[in-house]
Image (cartoon, rainbow over all chains, first blue to last red; front, top):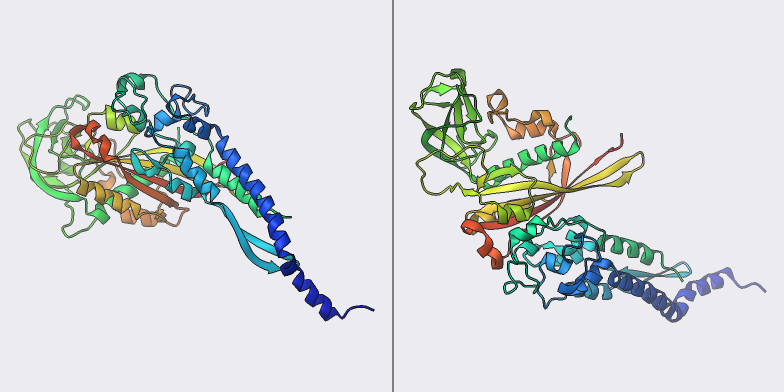
Length: 194
Length: 282
């Protein structure tokens, strides 16, 4: 005997809510895999590794033709952890239940956008500018040249004379960084299905 | 080489920037004073140059304020019909007919900008740390003419540092974004805050795309046709695919570093993201 279509319809509508605990669990696992992948990609980016390496790092990112490293060039304080702020923001990527739709459950994912990250990454010498954005669009060498001697150097890596350094012609080569990362993982999260 | 996209952008941007500063900030003052005879080896020997104590003079007749800027058209009854060229850029007049003597007395009233505006290709570190700009103070009195050509402060230096094209629509239309950076040299914090405030509020404004050929100045710094009105010029071209200021950030150079800055100047930065849609490959 066939079930009444109204009953079938009613049961079908209940499936998502009945399945939600299990789906939540599976979605969390899938979400966490992508989130971990995103954070790992950020941590393994040459810019992140170089800045985390502090004043002694090599110019792994290739942005400065090996003349100096990003930490010194931007002029970070020797005690600061500039990429730590971005890492914290990426860790705040989260999802929440959004709604039941026909036979499915939808979640919304919060991921910081590039503008939020830029706002949280001020240049040491001009707080309205973002060093993370500067990696993508170009950074002036002011932070580097302002460090005239070791004692006055906020990053600890001094230069003997700004004129002497300028003769070496430190030119900044832009590379993609945060914008590309966020764009890539926004798409990945949008396409996340279980 | 004929004018390219970036030439037009920077020309249009400079004219807009100057107008905004003068109009919104009323960043000018009328000065009455003597023009001093000064040698200029770059000019033909028959030309005689008489410099004021300030540059640049205001050229834009669309600017109005509590007191309107006075754009000079004559000095002591001498005007363009007497072979006078008004070099607004260098704040002087040049007599080209060989009729004046060095002791010719010229006095008059003219509006000067609170901030000179320049294009530059220099890096920020060179502008701030390397250059020893002469301070052409807008306060107090000077009893000599200012030398031509050299850039002086207070000033804003504009530079287009970065340009990128991204796909925008089918058919080859791209969104072109330019990062235009301004370095502001101000005499005091009041001036600096004023400039930064004016341009922080300029996000999401549009700028008319003014053809390169419409740049209002001649090679001698005088006005083509004797006058220039930015509003009229802008209105003529505003409907033709204008530039859009997508984003602006302003910031001050850290106080910690001011010991490195000559003459106690206050420095700030204005970063514009200017975009438009176009067909770069057509």
